[in-house]
Length: 367
Ligand SMILES: *Cc1c(COP(=O)(O)O)cnc(C)c1O
Image 1 (cartoon, rainbow, N blue to C red):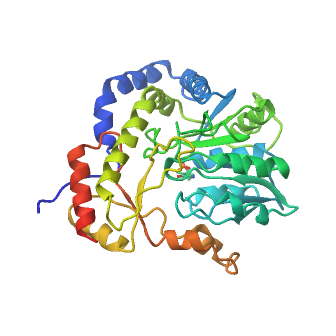
Image 2 (cartoon, rainbow, N blue to C red):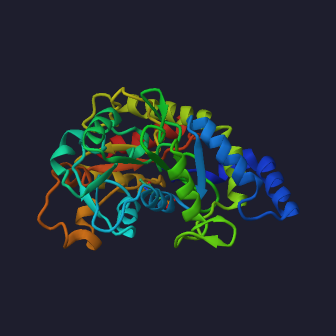
Image 3 (cartoon, rainbow, N blue to C red):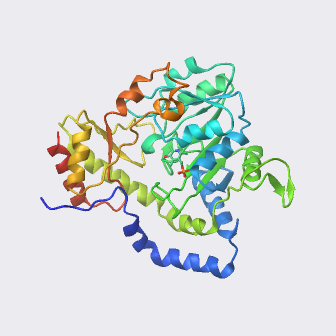
């Protein structure tokens, strides 16, 4: 069989369709030479706040920084505990560690890959200050249940929306439900720039002001510093790219959704588990992640045919070298089992039906 060349994400193809607009916007920045916190960052903050239906959006240097600065702004610090999921990218827990707090891992629901809200209450102690759910692969965690628990125990909710830009839950955009929502604009994310970038959204004026202060050297007024802050600003050039793509985000997410349905239709009657949609919100399919006992064979067959695939995530966080010693006495069976069975297939708005057929043909041939 002929070798194909299908990537996980086709950023080159997408750039070709946006080239004129992006190149012109970048040229304008070069002409204006307003490089740090310039008019495009300000405009993007307004546009994202409007899109998400919140009062404030603050551009920062990455998704990891968005989480870090959100935790600081929420007043989380040394000795505090933050409940989160073990089945996520390391940055979720790194940010908790940066502020001196302890990540408390609660197992996931094996269908949705999201934190199992029914297990959260048992993990709350008198040190717990917040719950940090991740909307894994583009589908919201069970926010109604999480919010009930957080209200009862007076905990903050900080959402990791790195994979869920534009998803909806209970009529709200991802990130608008909790106290603070954190986005990553890493190039491969649903809304991605051409470098690193991130954003924090909130309806709370004081926390918004705190994030603004932390991202810019602890300063509210230039050259007056209230606290030790960071250099964590969203870059002006990246803001140009994000503004071009934000206009098209709903179309991109719809195409992702339709691609996912096309994939799933081919899996009917097979032993492979297709992604589960819980019907509580919209899924924006950052990843299309299947589960199979033959995961490694599927991965190999795809590689042999020139089709990219990736395992997100092969090791849950409580088993990562960095955390293993501290968490050696806990076991989180769903996260552990799922990480041995998952494999994510190419997913991007421009994926063609013919490619989906070739990919699924290869997947099904391996089981
Ligand atoms: C990508 C990602 C991050 C980190 O974002 P960066 O912009 O790469 O710092 C955090 N959490 C999750 C779930 C992610 O997927």
